[in-house]
Image 1 (cartoon, rainbow, N blue to C red):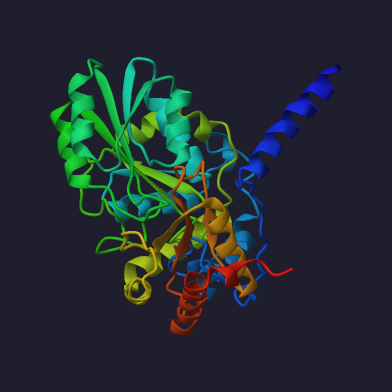
Image 2 (image 1 turned 90 degrees about the horizontal axis):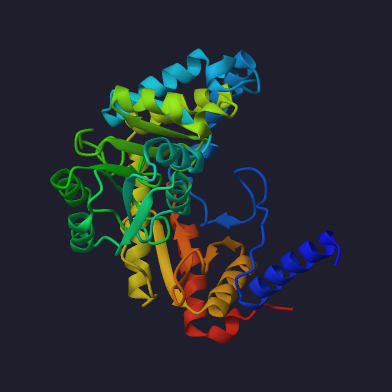
Length: 390
């Protein structure tokens, strides 16, 4: 058999298996612009800053001043003064000595774990950590163990059995599919007791949690959480990511993190837009107040309707439906009603825990949330009504 035919058959078999298991994924283009016809309850623009006119203008002005792209990697000629300004602002915001920009959150996690860990390192990860943390651990070649979700007793058991000299505990801050928050204080205490470093990926917490929006690690020192990762494409509404920590950590990443060294720097216009978004987050707490009011209202009404809502006080509100086909039916019905909600199925979540991942934003109006609640209640009251129309 020709090599090309063997490859085609292999790929076709994998696609067929995914389709038959109700796990086929499709892209769903949204209407362009802030006034599109579909209501978005699937994205991560928690404060609505992606559509904020001041952030948009800052990006446009950044492009006029610096150009559309950086043109090179940070260590060649792509690191501009606006990148420096943003790194300084992020370090100050998170209470760290320094911060380092990455092109994406995925690349930040890969780069940190690859640069810090090797086959002599033991990594301990929460079972529900983001895929980028799992992949980064595998890339590093370290020995990796996964403890039960938010179970510090299981983590302590694994740490106490480890004979590795170099230990690294890794956890999401806010878990992206469940919306619950890691117990930072307990993770820090256990890590220190067992001589381990602690890495928190607070992608879904920065901009949302904490007194100044600096996330679930806000107010926690770098001694307790030496490695802090945050993304800019969620609550801050732009793109990219950062790692914050002591100066020695950041210098080590500059020297050894391959996903930082060998890629084009973040477009400077994005950095300019992020600086404006960060200014809004720090100086306009009413943005977070609006978001929290929407979260409280949605939860109160959803629980009143008896919807199978998970336990979360963050913008991520999972509606656990269990069955994959049922989850797809509900999502399709909502789409027909002009409501875009994520249908999350294995392998993203464990088998039997398929869900609608509802995300709330400060931009959502009360009548829009009511529209979503009414459609969800219709699905719950009459499952037959959620069958896709021809």
